[in-house]
Amino acid sequence: MELKINSILFLLVVVLILSYKDSDKNISEQVFKNSDAYTLVKDWPNLPNTFTLGSPTGLGLDSSGNIIAFHRSGRVWETNPISHLPVIKENTVSVIDSKSGEILKSWGKNIFIMPHGLEVDNQDNVWVTDCGLHQVFKFDANGNLLMTLGEAKVSGNDSEHFNLPTDIAVSADGSFYVSDGYGNSRVIKFSKEGKYLFEWGKFGNKKGEFKIPHGIDLDNEGNIYVADRENNRIQKFDSKGNFITLWQNQVTDQLYSVTIDNQNNHLFGIDYLIVKNKIVKGSDIFRFDLDTKLQVQFGRSGHYDGPVTRYHDIQIDKEGSIYVGDILGNRIQKFKLKD
Image 1 (cartoon, rainbow, N blue to C red):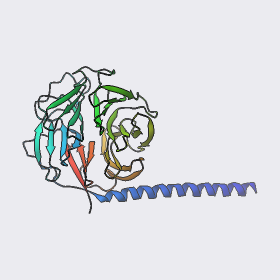
Image 2 (cartoon, rainbow, N blue to C red; image 1 turned 180 degrees about the vertical axis):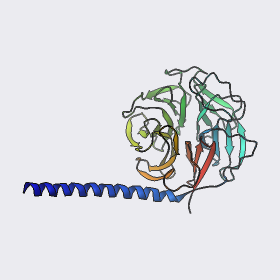
Image 3 (spheres, rainbow, N blue to C red; image 1 turned 45 degrees about the vertical axis):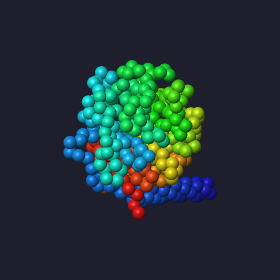
Image 4 (cartoon, one colour; image 1 turned 180 degrees about the horizontal axis):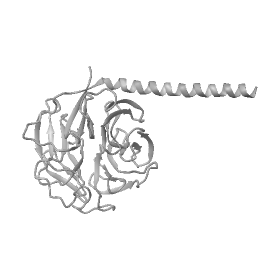
């Protein structure tokens, strides 16, 4: 009798496990099926042969829907310290027509050492971080300098210094958050005038801790989403830095950046997979709801017919098109929603 009961219990456990696996498989298949809604736009952007894009590490969108790319021209990433490098002589900020893919204007020569993150605020001001300079800059739409934070080529972890800052997110009221970054493991909030307000985070893998906070963005409620790169996850916080939730990527080792589509209440993220430190599998694009529930996934997996990539930043326009900066092929890709 005891043997019979144990056999029945064993069968029930097997059925439950198989049911769970089937359910998980169905969810995964639906996610990949949804990815068919996005198609790669061929021959975009339309860049002149004389133009060197370099690594497009930061992307933004202005009020006209144009893409603004922060790129490194001919500069390549070097191991720390990188502050000894000279400034890049070529332009490093380019405004690209999102429809035609043509460059409308470029600026930013003789300013930056190692371009990284870019944000465009609701006044079309352009904010950037430079890892080589350990600084954050605010420019107007024409490239005129409005604000500088941090001390040039001097790293630190106090209220007046950064250590290889990675990205910026600007609130509707002009206050802003900086993810800081490679050398520090924190997020700092500043007033619109650039006054230090508060910070949170330290190195680690617990909730509210970071291993390279690499990308950052805000939703309409003022919640903050951080791409916690080496922990391979997205963390969500309220405007005071209190932890809300997270999404843990179970497949790859690095999650590079996030952006919010506030028009449709979508969260987007990008990752990167390399196997055994030498076999490059490439990046995936993820779409979530604002509670970090996965809806769409494509790139190296799912529906995708383009080259192997290493996405560093991502933006979404008002039509729902996706723009990603690929630092493996030094290109910007555009994905359009199918009609």
